[in-house]
Image 1: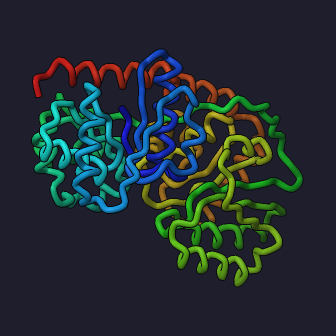
Image 2 (image 1 turned 180 degrees about the vertical axis):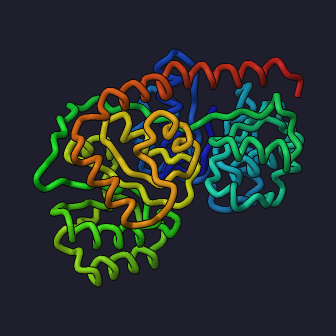
Length: 354
């Protein structure tokens, strides 16, 4: 069973939806439960996958804790996404005596800068000692800071399902279209993107689209002001209601990703799937994996002139990276490879006596 609080638009939520769909497609039995509400991404689950909703309002509601423990007790393994959800289910299990095995799937994105242990996490992980991190630094944290055994800690990097679309031939365009997909909060560094585009327009005629949900309204207001202040209104469009970003990638010539801290980032795999070249700051497990294969896509700093040079270089190359992007996606992010990884984790949990 896969557990999360709600399936709003976000990286961990996307991973759960794609993981559940992949497991179902491979013939595995899977159920999804949301602790608070289903959320927008619930509609993207295969309709044959059972979706339960606890409907919790107050996390200290004893009746809801009793019910989640009863539900989890129907399953051998409960795969919980995000630390606070794991803590909630582990507390319910402790109170009401569940015998199922819990796996924490940790998506925390700033582990290199913040290694603090959230309240209760160490206590509950020592009683439910199974951990999957989306990045190698998370795996190292679980061993070094939590004290888990290495054989109970796994790297489970992010994955997405490739949407079948008509892939566009990307010849060098006269007016290239740039895409940035990131929810609007400070760590995504839209402010740098605006400064970059303001300088880029001095040498290149282009348009750009920012796609993302508003996580921090105050930050979003600041970005709108920056767009107006740098006179980007005529070339930058902001979109908040796109639930299918892979479906629009064929309209663009190049993507940029300016976030300075990530656990994934998941969207880079989507660019790879749709063979949309990109320029991204190197942060997160996906960036580490892909830089070894296509180093031209990654930046080590935020020097604007370096970014401009790289953007212009990639645009001039058109479809040069198409084959290498396809090969990288097939080799690193296929459904079968991910299912085998998950099945291996679940098998190890069942064999172990914890």
